[in-house]
Amino acid sequence: MKILAILYKGGNAATSEPRLLGTVENQLGIRKWLESQGHEYIVSESKEGPDSDFQKHIVDAEILITTPFHPGYLTGDLIAKAKNLKLCVTAGVGSDHIDLNSAVKHGIQVLEVSGSNVVSVAEHVMMSILLLVRNFVPAHEMIERGDWMVSDIARNAFDLEGKVVGTIGAGRIGYRVLQRLVPFDCKELLYYDYAPLPEAAAKAVNARRVEDLKDFVSQCDIVTVNCPLHEGTLGLVNAELLKHFKKGAWLVNTARGAICDKDAVAAALASGHLNGYAGDVWNVQPAPKDHVLRTAKNTLGGGNGMVPHYSGTTLDAQARYASGTKSIIENYLSGKAQEPQNIIVGVGKYESKAYGQR
Image 1 (cartoon, one colour):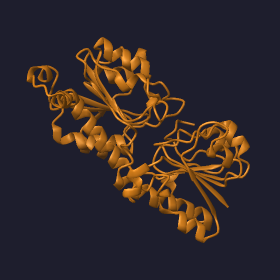
Image 2: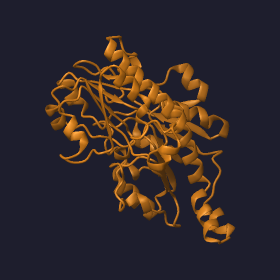
Image 3: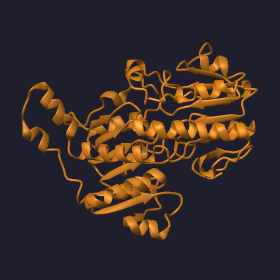
Image 4: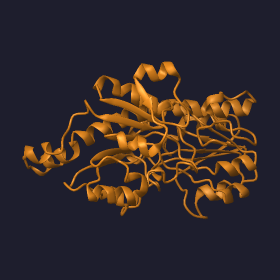
């Protein structure tokens, strides 16, 4: 069968570092295994437009492998043309780049390597919170410029201790963020989720659920977004919701860029309503060079902790999601049952509530 993988180009880094498995050059480490069984394995970064490798090969591929870090956007129109497509595998976590409703309609299974990068992302969230609260980026930029004015940095540097921190989403990543916040002696840990945490889990991190989103954000000094992107979360953090944030709050988004309205976030930073925004996810990836969140700043010229989408693609995470991708394909080829936690869409139906209550 034909197996198509859309991955990101690693360049010289991937050539010199074979553990960059999620790249075009290193191909998830599964080429020899697939070809030894007689399968055709097409790997490319080309994903935009009708002449792209993605659109040329999707028409007769049986398995599609994509990644959240360089997403091949599988729309309903492309699914309609993909007559042989039976399985979509996300090498990582997050399958919002696939039209899941169309996958259900056409009987295409969608799986991801659940849990493969939850620790990686949770650690990135913690780093992002700290670099915003401690005003790290302007401090480092000052050193690079050759300047030294402690007061210019300290006037907007704070402690994490004593702050109210809340997560939108308390699933595998959001809960791990709460766990990692416990030693910082925050004033309170909050969460907003469609389902309450099990009592023992909530007690273990001493987290309180707030059921109204506006009420939730109004109580937080720091808000971190850790929920999937679907119809119910698209544009969730918009200009209207931002009005209910505390003045001077910090916002971290390592979930999906389109959950936060980029222009509303930039405006809130410029006005001083938000003190900072950090994350690694963008509404379009790769982000255009003129994307507003590349250069958005707060009123003091700082508050921007944006980076490329890499929180979930550390070398450790790549080893896990490459192995998980192979396992999913191996199960499919042998007719073995898939691990339930990896299944987003089964044959003709949703198997996960993570992408909305359906």
